[in-house]
Image (cartoon, rainbow, N blue to C red; front, side, top):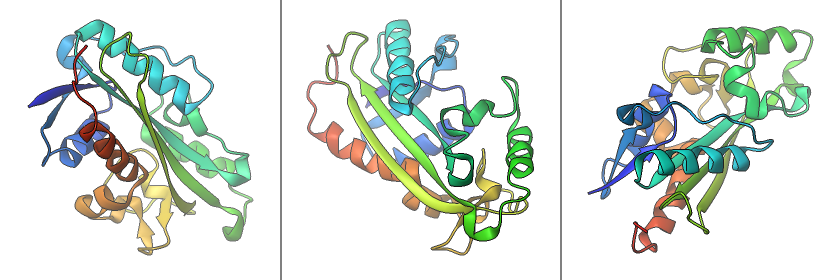
Length: 202
């Protein structure tokens, strides 16, 4: 088994990645297992932040790193919260805080204009000086509901309506979410790329 360190402190993301990689030769550990604090996200794009996080973890652990930078883009808010999704309502904001702020900002927006999408960028780096990190990106189209629905998932899932399934992302069975989500689609690309990458260490 090849150990990858997930460059995130988000337990929901860790669980999803562990499920997505369950049938592969890769095992995922959290950066907190190595007493690493999260990298400062100073980039202006999902790609920049994912690279910063992956490099930080590689340097701190000496192991290959998998970094995810993802968020939700709302068309009526000109793409916000975007890269600031996790801290939309402040640096210490909870999911509930962020969902509440999003609903407040969309109070006057009609149903037809509440289109949105989840974005995910994954970056894999073999080591901190890896000159060719693997970068994969995928999106998941939907719209923002008027109120939270469902108890599953995390982040904005209770507000994200999935038209193909006529329910919120928080109402999806975890296995189905791990098949159709932005993160799942990006991971499918990543797994294909990793199959062609040898060796996995510097």
